[in-house]
Length: 97
Image (tube, rainbow, N blue to C red; front, side, top):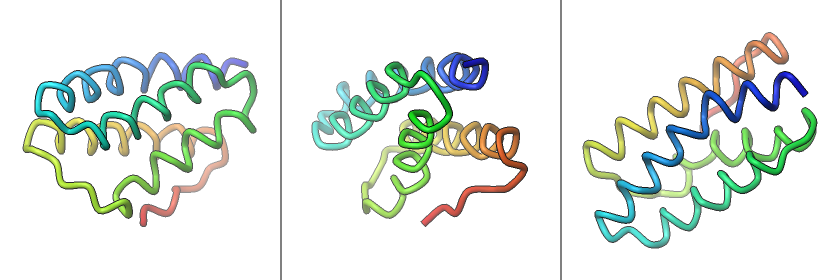
């Protein structure tokens, strides 16, 4: 449970900022994608639940989304935080596609 709380504390505010930024930019598809991830993150109760959010975050680059400079900076920060969390959980880096 500590890892899920840490993940929510680390990633939640960044996801909130990204969702707000995407809404301001009129990027509804990207916004919906990250809102779904945020929902999975907030609903995670163990490492298995948390892994769904981590997988979705690590594959967001493969979705082919184009971001503004501001949104891109937030996405990169989220991916770095995600990699650090995975490293903490398993001692390995996630594959970013």
